[in-house]
Image 1 (cartoon, rainbow, N blue to C red):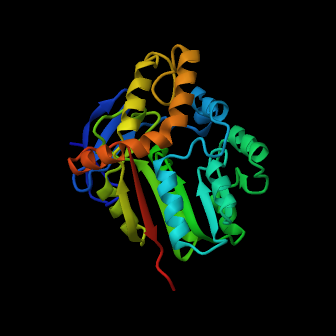
Image 2: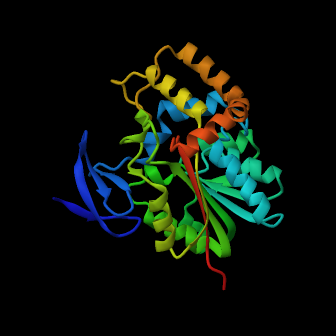
Image 3: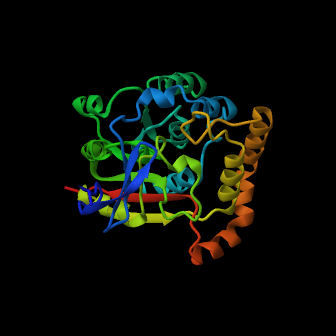
Length: 303
């Protein structure tokens, strides 16, 4: 049986089979999964993808795309970071989270390869000089250091995520925080987007903890989401997708006018739905239901 080493805990990974043209591996120690293909997904695949362009047009306000992991992260940062702390959001898209941090008094910056999203955010949210297409190598060469680095829904898209995480650790000040969100591999229902070419890795909470340890970081907090609302929203959304057409998230939408209207309504109702369904979500969480997010926060050792 073919084996490769796990990127999280360095144990052996077994080959489970394949999905389309991707070989599927799973770590027998921490549960991390990886899909491997010679044709690596390129940045321009996201830059021209209909789903990502739709997000820019359907959800124009800085708060429109704040999800469970963003809210938990910003609450934690508010409790554990000083006023004016230097923050960096890696994979910031159009900078909506950077704008949220700036509005709370942080010295916030962001990086993303998506030139369309960066240009839109610089104009829409007034983030010129705050978000850019610069690389983390550029920042390190300039001596940049940050109190907090966030990375929301990024590492699952990367063929090799270790180099970018090592860059994050180098850019963190001593006692700095690394905040990572990624879909929970132990989710109770897996949507079409959690497959290649959109997602190349799947992480369990254990694999994230092992990954933090391998980077020399100390785990501070780990949380798993249970959300009936997100489960229902994603399940209904999957029914409207063309399975035979190209899209990073599992096929472009059919009946676009109806879908766009439903997506806007669901987005407006999300905060209310989370609060109303919180008791049910708590009970389901205790029963083992997981959907869809997880958040890990780790600290770089001090001097």
